[in-house]
Image 1 (cartoon, helix red, strand yellow):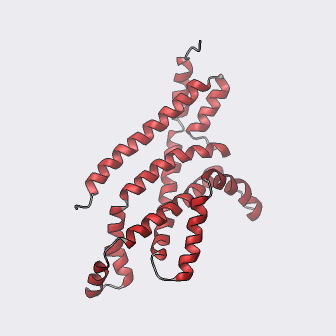
Image 2 (cartoon, rainbow, N blue to C red):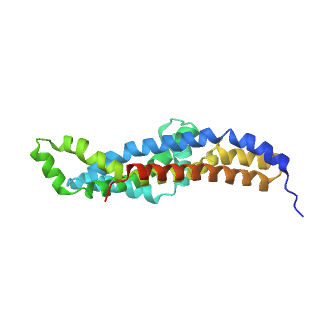
Image 3 (tube, rainbow, N blue to C red):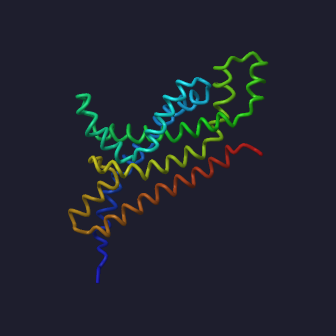
Length: 220
């Protein structure tokens, strides 16, 4: 009968917990960069320029349909061969997660922009606002408010996907769990602690996101 080793659990909690900040940092940086890429893509895809729409649609489809792990491996191992520039594992991981995130959020932003009533654009024009001012001052603030829930949900997805960076040696939660499992030959204890850490982070973020959603919900 298997005996749960609480000694290993204590060591695992301490050691794996030190990777918590890196998991959160990578996830937050990936979300921020993903939003920065997704917003202009979403705006430009909502225009009537066929060339831009085609090029950006190809971008979205590419990064939506390539598995994140493949992106991580390709950027870390293949891109340096092509460019001669060696990217660190953390930077490569953030870039891969950001590209994937931007593809999903670009569609969310495009849908949000398309969902704004045409009358608001007409009203803005009647007030003397040009297209840029209308997008910046009228459309985008409403889109961000409506898309708050999907963005927070994407943050939770990123926290879980950050585990894939252990494949390229980033010392986040899962990688530290791997090391504890190997060192002590106690995979059950090590990966149970890893799972609990991920649950604690994701559950906390989900509860915070619910409060933010209620706070900024648009009245029906």
